[in-house]
Length: 68
Image 1 (tube, rainbow, N blue to C red):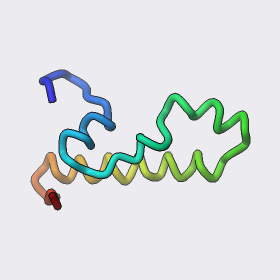
Image 2 (image 1 turned 45 degrees about the vertical axis):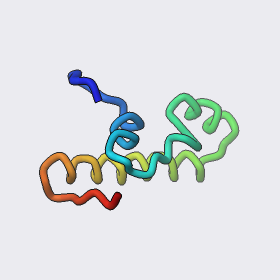
Image 3 (image 1 turned 90 degrees about the vertical axis):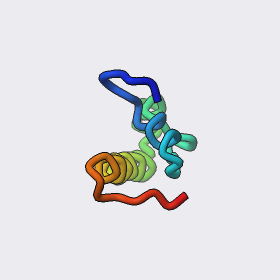
């Protein structure tokens, strides 16, 4: 991953070899999920984002382990 101030979560997951949930649903789909009233999928997507961000953070501070 290039050194930048910010990196997309999807890019971080791919670079670390972690499962990337954003291949099925990503932020660009949020509007259509709301319009379709697909709140279950929207909430699942948000929860997966939080879980993956926490996993990446744990790796960054040396508390996580890569499983690959």
